[in-house]
Length: 124
View 1 (tube, rainbow, N blue to C red):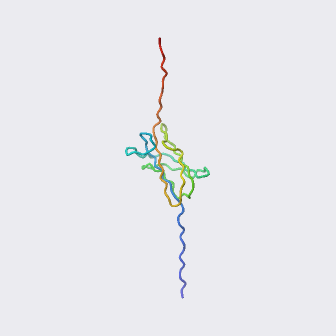
View 2 (view 1 turned 60 degrees about the vertical axis):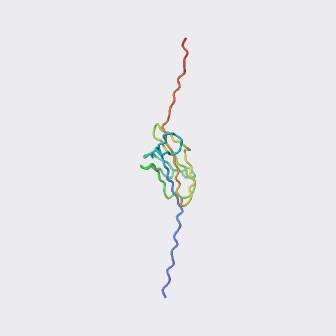
């Protein structure tokens, strides 16, 4: 008799992904509104739980910076806003990534508002 083939076990994927959405936060409230569009071309640095740089991604036309095939664990995302802008919401962003999961945090970019206050001088 011929031997019966033994099935080869397939490992269950144990990685996850992070897809950070970056948007133009017109009202600087940290939440994406219907008129607040995605922002492309923004560099995002991904660090692991020990602070080592794992990857750098640039947000695409949909405002998404993707980090794929990551082992589970804590990660920190640091967004580099363009000149004249600041991030709204928590920054850097900390993500506790689980296996077989896609984390989808988001962060807004708002123009830096500078207010100048000139002292009033009394003139006799």
